[in-house]
Length: 454
Figure: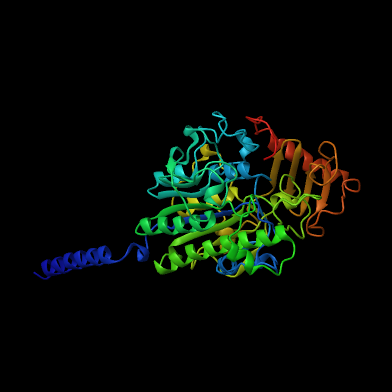
């Protein structure tokens, strides 16, 4: 009889436990997969956040994101250009593995876009049960077959190309899905609004949101109220840049506030990067960005083209208020997101990224995520191994002339600005790094389309 009573008691306990679990909101479910939020800025300078040393443009919301997580001080992207970086991010592979080496050509090039054989992060997370959304810039192909909703995204609000007007009267319509959104708001504000709305629609279950701002990319469009805030900046381009950056920071703040209100901060793994360094080519004024103390610009394999602000935040799961100084790359975002989502990473996917979680938390026994990082961009190249970097870059972007330079050797620990070439003094190190880059390059393919500049 006692055994029977114990059985009834256990049954009632299980039923009660199940009822409580059903009554709890999804945000407090301990077994819930984390939401994944990737925020990408466009053409932002390395030095243009408060946490990166910026003094003239307050960025309190992005700074707060960094202070709540880990700022990777040696964070890189795999391309010095918009589209290649995004191709690497979406696939978790060096984009030179599959020919996406350069930006797509003119609008209407039906065969130019992220190759259809490549699986995206949205594809993989959607298969794992995630709601998936892209808000903002795509830049991985204009043709219908490359559309975000054909590449794993359930929802899409934004534009397909590499640049877009911020004011509705000055450019083509912003899209919602495949049709016009009839958007009337300043674009950065609209992207923030749509990101908040996506979270609201999907807050009960795991979601993947790719929030890809076009700020602070040209055209230089800012709202009058924000321009007025920066009257103290005398340079007109820098003043407009500041106003545009302020709009993006405010949009990030609205997204973070939504996560707080919905009690989702502890359930959301967040990444923030820029897609490449600021376009600071000597003798030109592109968007007023600053890459100090880095030398070089967008479009080069110097540090100023490929080293970017890189923030990882996961409240209660990863360290807060910390910096991490080992080299990491945006390819790691793909792999890290999959690992935290519980997706089995298969060898045949040939991912080049690494799960950063154990490294940022200090749980990994390895000293650093990568033995080396690599770049190829036409005739330009680079390899970073430890503190050593071998680089061949475009002198035209540096204000010079001619083809890509002979390889230069820098020790980034002593010379972050790449000012002192040690190649002549250390020829063996040059040969060693060049041989390692050559070995890596054997697994790359020829570009599927040519270079060119936006």
